[in-house]
Length: 543
Image (cartoon, rainbow, N blue to C red; front, side, top):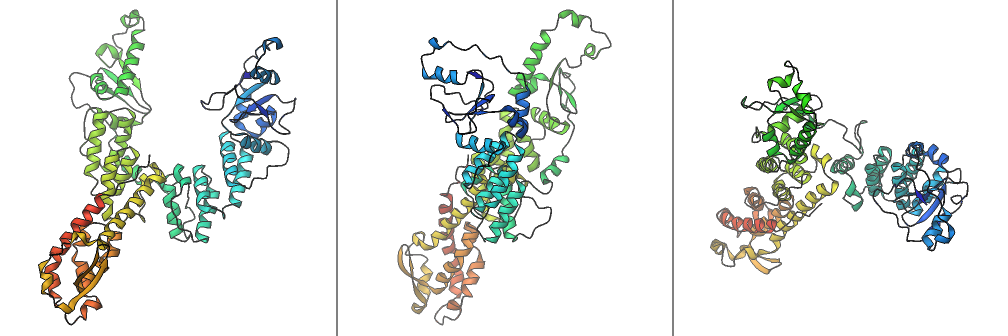
């Protein structure tokens, strides 16, 4: 049994398990290649048919094939494994990760036989992924049509499947069905593989009731990224900042090259250190007489850089990378420049610079907490993401689009939304648990007329308070859900709302002016309780 090509991406063959055979027509002796599924079912198929249906297989079958090994004599075959080899003798075997059910569906879409009756969403999705993987265009088109026909059954899941595979037409049909059924746009497990940007666009589309521009797209942004514009404003040049000692090496990018001091860049970046070590070993392998014969007019004769490494970065990125290595400008970067710099610092392993950039990002969190949360999540800066998430409690986020939504998964965005909801619930719960308000404070409560007090039942029991205080708690509830901060409780806006409440305004026994005096003390207690409650809420892990 000769293995021609392993499509399993690292999944080893399991010859110890017995092989079974697929159904007709995938067991014909005229077949010239065999596929083995992940559950050890073999399909004997014809290369010419698969090559016509798949550009992937057409290319693979056009490559030179290994010479088949001689058959093992019957008397030397004592195990079931060898018997299986005898049955497949002379034919190449391709082991793939797909199950037999998926291969059966896929091959039937390629062969001149009746197409499989695919009505199950899981079966269609699994087969579609295989069709896309093996570049089977007609099969992919047929499966897209099957998906579109099922959008009414589970539009949220269909939307996630479509966006994962960049099927814009299917995504649009699923989004339209979400609007038609008036479904709540919420995160589901199937969205783990799509970006937060695609999740946002579905929510935006649903909020607009489908009334969007003709250029609106779901699977990709329909406009240029704002941080790309900011990136275009970055400096495109690099200077070491000193001329002595002169640079002893060269770093070449896609469209620029700069002289550098190898000691500096190698100390900063372990990746560049390895690249220069390799360049040095390559140079040392050149025969000594080659250097001796160098022309006096050659660049190296005047001390120009001798070592050189090539990087794929463009001029702007290369200049940014080198400024990071030389510790230039790291404290004066715009938030979008920090994100670009973090990408380079991570790629080229600049740990000290990464920490500096994280500190700079933290300093920007109060002014732009949502963007900092998304960037921190993208780079795995968990503590910074938690810090930024807490700061988002004071700003609305859901109507706003951020370019960084395209860099993180929908799960990351949903984690933030869930965190904000949990904080709102925790803050609101303090209004039903008045343990934060001591029984003997504030003492001025006793100055109210006895007729002004009302019974108030909460989680901690029934207590009697002035009518303005009960109205204050009632008005504050919705506000805390939207903005679960201590500062919400101390805002005089809600005291004014309470004093204007009909139950208070027309209370003949209520000395409403006393509420103003007591408000500072009571709201201070409540603000502390809210802060403690919210601090207990943790951002859900989304790795």
